[in-house]
Length: 430
Image 1 (cartoon, rainbow, N blue to C red):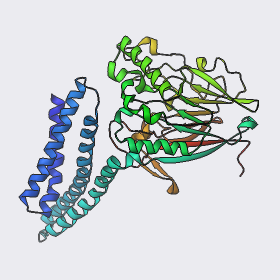
Image 2: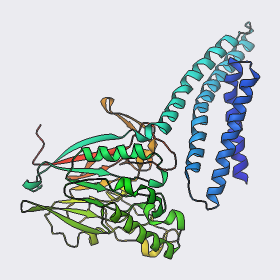
Image 3: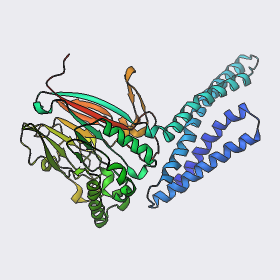
Image 4: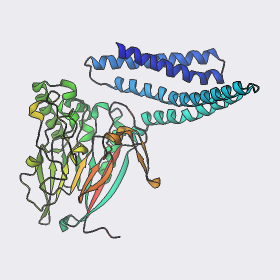
């Protein structure tokens, strides 16, 4: 109860301070009433859904939009507060100087109105960004292409194309037309393989029931392969209930079959071409966080792989690539879901030339301006390798920004991604 009281007080303080902009620019009581009525409705709606969520209700579209409305309304107000607080500091400083110097008091009203207008203009930018992100941005699919060179790539696979998608989160999706367009965009790449790197649902396999006829349309010449992500095991719906989790796992495996994906559970597949081959490896979820299941095993996935072969690995969580410390808490995760001696990919005894991951979504919020070298999202402080291509010890990691979205029903600056990677033999020319 205390945290609810604190939250309400903080929101009220923010709202009251932001309201000073409205008071400065208009004397209309109708606008005042609309301002406060809208704030009250958004806050009450959020508290209602959040209270039901912490009581165990599954996360629904209603929960997502409750979060979206709260952010859309109050992030712009935070900009109003910053401007007005700065103006108040200047006003206070001017007042003190005048008081002790016996100068004539200045008239602050003109400046206050100018600052209020400026604050409103600046606040309209995040407001428009949130509205766009919720209505259009989450469907603004981007095809990002990479060409990677390897000395040990078999000659038959020179020019081989792989499309990676990740984090569909079908439980959050709404528009079948928009998602079908994304699927068509994947198929237009005409890749040899499609690799899906986990989190096809939010919490339950049944979330895919209405989407099977959409996602079974993916096409690739040499097949479609997939792995599970942390959301695919049922923990967010069933907690530690072993039987329900097992049932969800069986349904999840059936889902992947229904849409034509070969689900790799710490396993591998050999792709052969003109007498040569590469291996596609898939581990179950494994990451450094103590809150997620750790079933992934590189040793099991490579038991049929010989040293010196060319390997592409799907591992949902990018922290698997080069973590240095493993934080485990056996009270959070069932013992049978912990692989305690799992090495990171960089130090694994067998060469893994390319690792594909997802998981971060780029937090669905950030700024990316490649022409200016700008790439930032708050998620970088949790996952240093959070989006795009990375290289370490002659091994590549690609982190996909995700196909769908989770919790917040939108994307701002970090758009849904379809990755196309072309493999080339030899060294990149200067």
